Image (cartoon, rainbow, N blue to C red; front, top):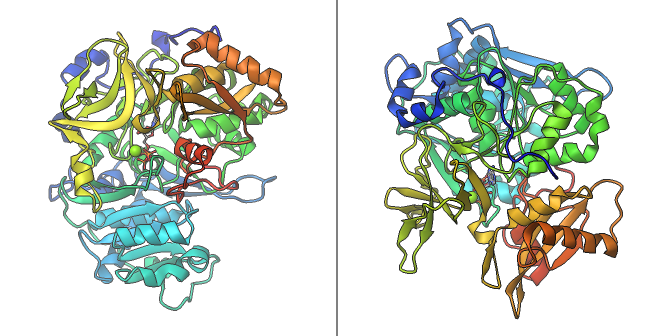
Length: 595
Ligand code: ATP
Ligand code: MG
């Protein structure tokens, strides 16, 4: 409470990316084709994500620079084991994987899935397949057999790269349900080559293969199929093309300020689009060293990684920030972060208290940014070059045109131009990483567009300075006594209270109000729930928001249901509250999985 509404940056703090001395002038004159021209093309022309990410650096000045730095689990008390691949080594391994696929008869447009922990072979397979023009889908390794089989089936998987352990535990039982699946490539659990009937040992195939040249691809060729998080319903498969690389490159510059001397850590798993666009592609395009932690979240370990790996740019998510907050400042205080110069967050609204937590504990505020699986890359951001408004998602990046719109009764869409008016967030279609379809759902894809606008399904408002503020998902908005209430506003107000760690808000049917606001609250460590605290929190929200918007009911819970990518599953809270079927829970986080 009582913190400034804007975090002003001193000119000396800004490390302005090249050509961004005046954002507005640049934005006005921004051209995606000029941006594309800055990124060299493969020798024969065309466009290929993996060629731009690794091959391009393999003979150049960055060839010996570490491209990927893997941090193994190791002994918790001892040093973290490190395995590095230089750009030249990564290009070599990816080239070998391209050869392996080609020898299996897998080519352009064929479908490969990767189902593995964050091990080197996952990254090698993704890059090698992209070089081969093969369409890649990384799946989160904690998926059980059912969500795995559904996605493999939906995507008509032809090749699966997985580990020996995951094969036995999850894949073997469902393999017969995916008739298209011709090849399973296994990464062994130990040093020995694997010998599992019906599978091939990937490491020995890679060792024996000669690197192959990339298959020519164009900007319009399919590259990645990514499933959404399933927050609002059954996950959708969003298809992206190789041309998306231009967005990955531009956003690496404008939103993350990546430079070749950076050590970058994106904490997302490649099973989610953030872990692919920013955990694999964007950092490599910029020639940085990208840290990959193979282990699961543990607060002290994360601080240790930031410190010991000398991370300079960190991209994480509100769910992780909340977990670090919950671990307490004393854990952070055991470490120092002199190299850290920029922190960004995505995936869920970032409440102002979390932005300030960054300043207090890590010495830097956190820059929220907004995008979706469908957009393929960051669209709206608090950038390094601008003042932060805590609680805001920031401003549209160069080349991104964002609008607030309302749908008319007759289905038409019109723009809302008044500052601070709520409506659906829409983007003018045409940026390079825009999705090109939902797998097997053409009608649903078509419905996302109105004229040249892509309708995001999120509600937001734009203030007079051009900053965008997240209101809620259209599906989650509460209609109470004629008011439209965005859950995020209520959740942020509750999270401001020192007793509250996290809150989620839903609407429950009410005879008089239509819907009434109900809050579920997780308390900070060591704070006991009781009626007095419940009344205090409702009172606090009333003062902040007014009685019409503040929760009428408040329930204390030990934890909130999250998707595996860290999003609050309000639809599940609502279904449970109303005693309805829970719907698709394939991406629900299990208690032991934390990111
Ligand atoms: P599904 O579409 O299957 O319901 P999902 O929308 O959660 O799942 P993703 O594409 O992974 O799947 O997530 C994108 C969504 O996450 C956005 O549409 C938005 O609702 C939310 N989001 C992302 N970043 C932010 C942010 N900075 N602030 C608020 N919400 C965000
Ligand atoms: Mg979505």
